Image (tube, rainbow, N blue to C red; front, side):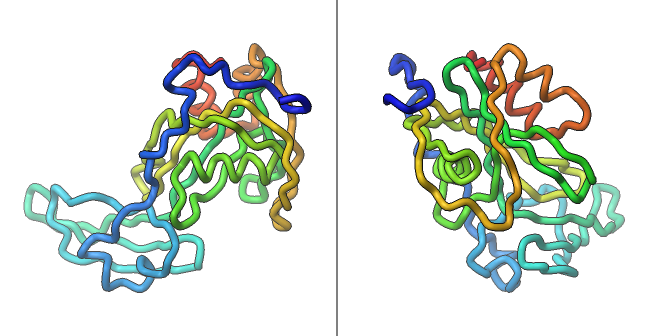
Length: 222
């Protein structure tokens, strides 16, 4: 791996790519007749409800997220509309090499500030979290990993979102020639491991970066 960044130590089972971390969910019976959920995209679909769902209504379908509500019967017999926004599953990558963690610096128009973040992106149809993580890492930083591991899958902001996120550790990085997404404007930044959490906690920051680093630290990667 000359010209690469770091290498996998080859001693931990967890260094092997986890191929059973499927991000796609089968469209459930209550969604299979709704065009917004059978369009070929990956979707963050919920499981079987514990409270009866009387109606599922889609009010928005913008091509990258779906918005609507479930009309739910609550334990006391009353009914309530629970609004949600559904987004495709996402992968977040903690790339560790030669004592550094790879970040990307980018401006976020939604919150109107520039942040140092972990590389991340949407899981495409047919991909696992680890496969999507390797692809996004290459596209955003120009480095491809030789090993990946899914640390954790989580549901995000469960009061309003239907959105799953997978945190992936990547090691053994080699430079690759990959065409970057023309709609992304970002710069890779290497941050020493011992500074990564402090950098991530500096305002402005975001949940995905902090959660990813804390999970990686807990599992012994940082």
